[in-house]
Length: 308
Image: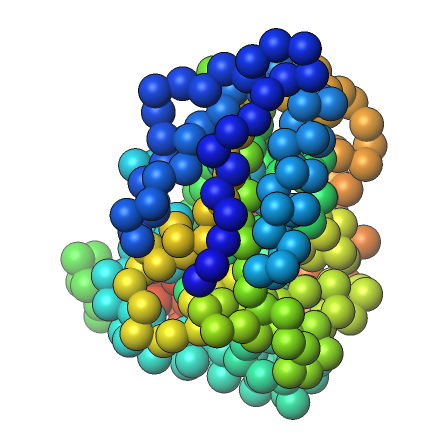
């Protein structure tokens, strides 16, 4: 995929510091990691990447607390090594929601998995956003996950204690400000510009989903997060193929990012992760999940229950 990597950038008045670190793409190209310490320079950097790549596609953002050794893997492929195995299992999980949730009965797996991704199911899609402030929030916050298991009850002592296995589970998540010193913003290019159906865009190398266009408005979470998902178009691509979409990387002090975000309700946890009392789509997913199936495929996550 053709792309313009941002390998030169200067502050308005001084040369911008570029550290010795760089992001190594799978295709062998390297992306310098620029240290930026002002909001205006950050906006300029994102603008430069979007402008320089406008003839190749659209540039999106992803906030992270680490570079993760130049890995840009979708969440499920960090757990499951075989993409074919992942796709087969995800098909079963998607079908269970289609059977139990009226909103998904006639929805494609592409759309359904993109929505499920934003409510806790690990898929072969990667989360990206089209909002710099949301990217900064995710890059400066850490998620903790706790699993609560539910066991089959013993009847009349007929089942030995050692044979009682969990049959379902709940996953609770909590977000806290990151304790890592740096926040990273990755800029990823998608060549998916051909809208094959509403909200789904294809290119020669990537498929892009605008979740705000494919999910009804009562699924508030993806709308609040300005959410997209992206995946390689070639189903036989390697798990790290999306590293070849990276066109720019920014490194910022986390303490600066948290100060920029401040205490605005727009970037609060209840706004980005509305409770089931506000997010009717979230509630419908909780009611329609097959918890036994999700336990069976425990590497694939679950519908997250957010604690505030």
